[in-house]
Length: 118
Image (cartoon, rainbow, N blue to C red; front, side, top):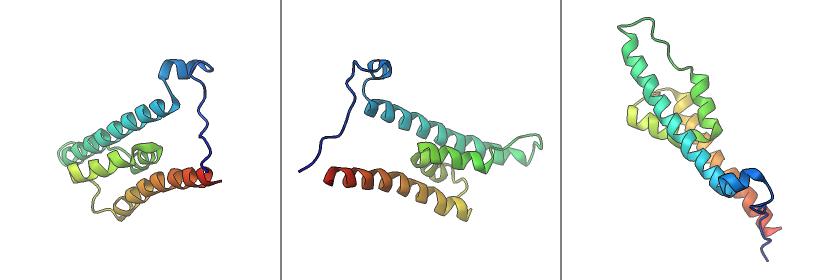
């Protein structure tokens, strides 16, 4: 038999009263971080093209791109790589971003299955 998943009562905590449920808050976060990550990949590609003519153009560090992906924006990073043809030749991005996305799907799914069945 499946155990019920704990959800806080909406009136118990102020943030849930403002944001709705924790699931709505998570959905808003994931939408926002993926949009930001997608556009940061686009901006970095634009800066990479422009750098040839303007030496003062500062690029987005690769560490920042990976951090945005790790914070939940891995789908946006993958779409940004494909849409802007950016960082697609770097092995660390070509394999790292899909690996982060897979972990972000498999770990919560595994935890949900584990706790639902126990």
